[in-house]
Length: 330
Image (cartoon, rainbow, N blue to C red; front, side, top):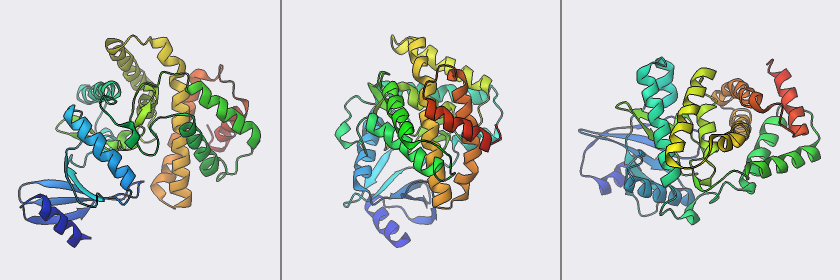
């Protein structure tokens, strides 16, 4: 692989490579390498999924023009399976938060993240060809049902929870219909969480947005505030939520109560998706870091459920939530 990297890199720059190191495996099939030259460093990506690559190339070029904080797309090989992007360092937000207190400096960075998220949500669709979005151009009912069934097959069934499948499917369909009542005319990052936010020179940058599509505002903010890895306490989460709502008012006429009507429901569906992913990656693929993430994600699920527990009308989902609560001693 390193010989291939050297050959492709020579088409991009006349710089001598001094070191190539593989970046640890993530949840995707993409492979990343950091290339060091005498004066610079770059990120090399290999991905055989051409449709996903096309989405990434188009999104990145679009966001670069708008000065949204994402990597620069520097080179694409003729097969479109290998490409080079700018190096945003190796400090992910979750690592940064583990080593720093929630002081003024940290909060400033978190506020910047929300500012840039809103900018992306409101401007991201401009001149964007959603026909290139992968795997779907909108977070529609099919997308939501995929996530809910991912949760069913790779979490509920793997942990052997007891439920009526017919009633659960009916609840899932009705739950999806409720979510689709929210305004969805915005760019949805899809996986807006701490591992996909890099911190470099005290500023945030976003990566892994190639699954982006058209969708509702609430989803990405819920993904961020109920991240299964980062432990925002209730106070910090509320501060950031109110900051987002305040900034949202500056951008649109969307009322806070309308935004909040669906916010915690989106948090729940996001956490269902995360638990499905953790079950698949952890239990099926036997990757321990994902198994280790499950208890915290479960805890976040109930933190999201608590504010709407009295109004939540989906009885079979309530049934499985009660069982999860017992199993994880919450």
